[in-house]
Length: 317
Image (cartoon, rainbow, N blue to C red):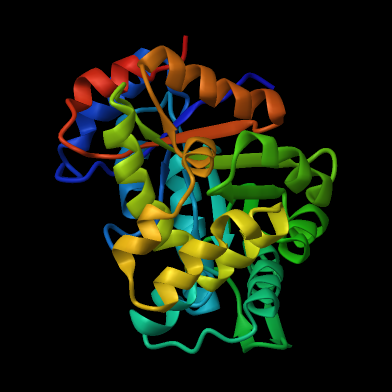
């Protein structure tokens, strides 16, 4: 497999149509992939459709689309539509997402995330294969659904996975796993749960500056925002960072946001968020690749940097 190297889209403050020129630039610089997300900005699919019809040299992926926020039939239709436009260049990422996204922002109970993800994965695979589905799953039921525009070939489906149960599901029933908010040294432990012969993708947050104090200040705010969410907190307890992050969790629970940031150790910041010169950032990304990440996807953290310079400086060599 040729080493892939992706970048996260869309950029903050850049319209989707303005990304057309960026897509050509990414391909010219050697990026192989563009991967979207689905949190509180653009949906996961629309940026990929723009990329698909703009730049045939790029692979496309979404990391991840929540299994809760679309009905199963609509989700299958969306995947099939992007796959049709992309012509074999699309990788689908499914995941449970988190309680804030699902429940607070979308008004949907965040219940049985493992079972929901498993059931949606099973449904989507069968639907994309052209099967007519009439079944009661544990977390929903579908009666008589069949895609009228089935895909010629089902795209690879990766699961956003953080802990052993979901990682094993990704290895057992999906085509691999998407990792997030982990150190390069954590990849081996996650891959061991997924198993051999499966694709591992990871989104890597990058702050390209040699001003370590500024980078760590920004990174601490990101870490406290993410790793206080129960799903991510449990992930890092499993990875062995419980002692290092307990002071942050305690301060956050007490309502002391500044204190929560202040007690995050530099060592944790430097493991989880890539920063430094462009050479140092690329070397750090390489450590993830060496550890077994086949599709690293950098996410440039905006903090007043020149995007043109950052995209070029972080491009694969």
